[in-house]
Length: 292
Image 1 (cartoon, rainbow, N blue to C red):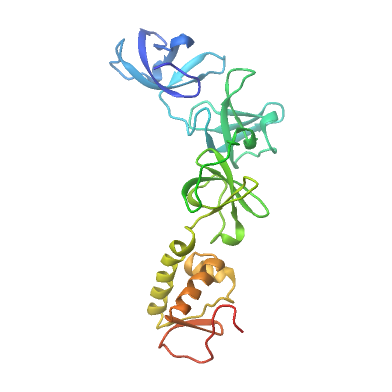
Image 2 (image 1 turned 90 degrees about the vertical axis):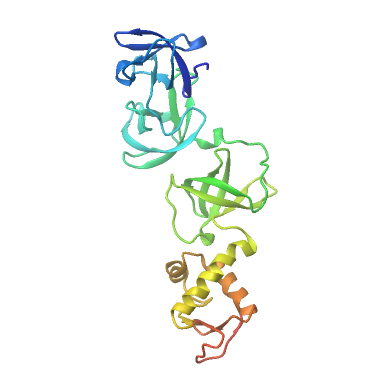
């Protein structure tokens, strides 16, 4: 296998020397794997799985350590330190921290915070660096997703509308605050769904499948809770979102859809400030969602 900077490769041992072993890097030439990473009994000719990068003196070296991401990938990384002149250094899982140059910072980062960064080979220096200017490295071709499709998400940024997320390491989408059961953390990886593909190319996301698939599990959860609490719950479509999230971990929108479906099926009644199983009894007239 040919060696590539910022990628894992299986490289053959050419020779064994005092500082370690030299690997066949193909067009990149011999690459040193320092002795601290070499297993006892390693022989010339065998292949070793390594990650190739440059050391502090710009020499190509290999390591058996596994970084959290390699060239061409997005990752959530913690800021270890910051320098006004050079930029910031990120913990990416190797003994040598990864540079996030000042010019590549979408905003100034602070030590201790987690940032979502893209890793690339700097065309100026041929060294691996990070950037938080993510838009330059997203796929701008029209996505081939289907509405309702399950997709892996990396939470990249909190905005006034919700959270920007990177979809399958390629496209950007938005999770809206009013459709979330609670807050998310930048750098968190979650499973999501494509809610809508907009004409302007933007993608709306959800943490729940659309339509019946979304509310069916919640409906069962509500029915179980009603049975456990004697047929009544002090929640309704007028309850605050915080109370609904605490009880069911769902958004108010999803909760209203679920109890609306249960009401239409004549499985619950909705009264002032509460819902009840049919037959549980209780004061006050019943009504449907939105009725007064």
